[in-house]
Image (cartoon, helix red, strand yellow):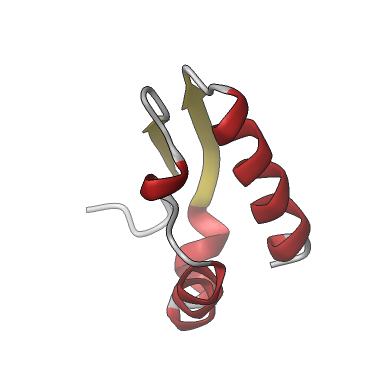
Length: 68
């Protein structure tokens, strides 16, 4: 198995609503505990069907995680 392989993730934001939101503290914590070598292999995130609520949430997420 090749340890240097990168990976991509597909996020489906269909029917996203305010009740679907994960608290930002949880996301920040998850980013902190994921090892740097694993994060370095992450290549692309595909975002499918974002509605206006999802776009607003993703903007907040982008601002908080910039540089991570």
